[in-house]
Length: 65
Image (cartoon, rainbow, N blue to C red; front, side, top):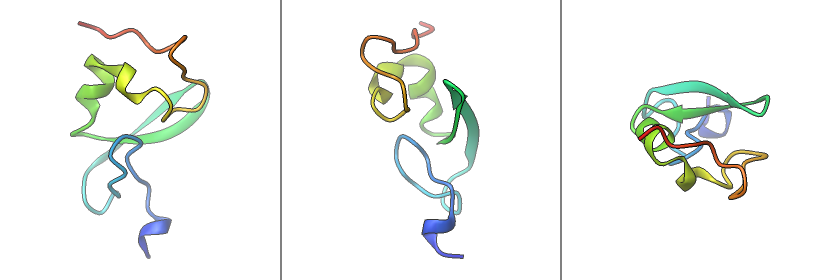
């Protein structure tokens, strides 16, 4: 299996053979995020605008802090 066949983190693009990944969905689109980038999704999701299909600066998810 080569890296193009591996799932990768939507934030840092590291593959699943390098970091643990968590499956997530946004607007009915499934993707992956690594455990090291998960705090960004939780606390500063605006940094991920443009990486998720259908997420724009007009509709970013609210930060929880």
